[in-house]
Amino acid sequence: MIQASAPAKIILFGEHAVVYNQPAIAVPVSSLRATATVEFDTTNAGLHVHLLDINQTLPIDLASELVDDALAVTARMTLKHLACPPPSATITVTSQIPMASGLGSGAAVSTALARALSMAIGKPITLTDLNQIVYEIEKLYHGTPSGIDNSVIVYEEPVYFVRDQNIEHIAIGKPFRFLIADTGQAALTRLSVGDVRKLYDNDPAHIQTILDEIGSIVIQARAAIEKGDAESLGVLMGRNHVCLQQLTVSSPELDILVAAALTAGALGAKLSGGGRGGNMIALVSDENTDAVREALTQAGAVKVFETIIS
Image (tube, rainbow, N blue to C red; front, side):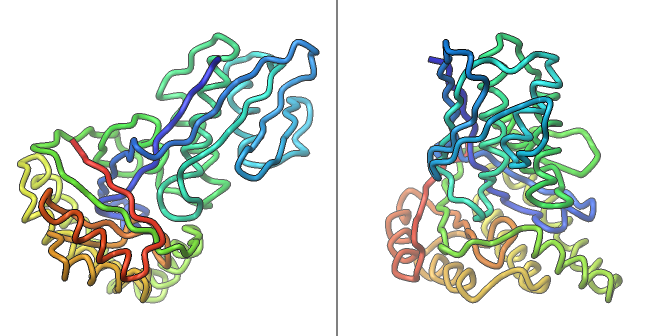
């Protein structure tokens, strides 16, 4: 059996500001994954991508672009890049990652599919080339993506990211434990990104001040991560969340979860991703993880995931 996978991701700092060339920090969530499994078909029936979670099958035909689903485009782009014909196989894609929640589900399924396809035809694809393909697919989901989702998911390492600059990998001073709480509300990143753009166009001087503040927070957060300074990191999370509130991308549900986490003893908490729903993250210690998880559940989180960044 040929199988490939890719992780979810969370943005620790810098969402939205990263679109305006400010830095951001993102980390993989390796415990949540998208998986693509290849089954070869001896009947020469061609290549199909089966989306198990919604029971949909997509035929992949390099001569036709009638099927414009993002995963069909991923398969075609991968085959064209590798200069290979489609194998006679079905690739089944499934994901543990909630969709439209800021966890990078779109980039993860595209990454898993492209990897599985390259393995099926026996022609490896470099991380650099895979990252570029998934970035192009991200444009279908988000319009004008920053490139951070595909980068952290393809490389599966914590990254310090500035648009159009080389990716920098971050040294983690000591392990940090985070809880990820899902509001249960789907949120389209392209809509919140578009609304921030409108704010910027209407009052660029004011919005730029907020974006610059976020950029400064990200730089300080990197230093705290590399030193293993959890207390400073928690304070910076709070400051970043306030900036995102000012950009109007938080929501009552996210704010309630942030407040609940802090009341229960979290060192820091903020929304993560596009906002207006989706997820928030809380920095916790070994001692208060259970209490914060319970508080988040009581405050309305439909799911709470745990991840350790090390």
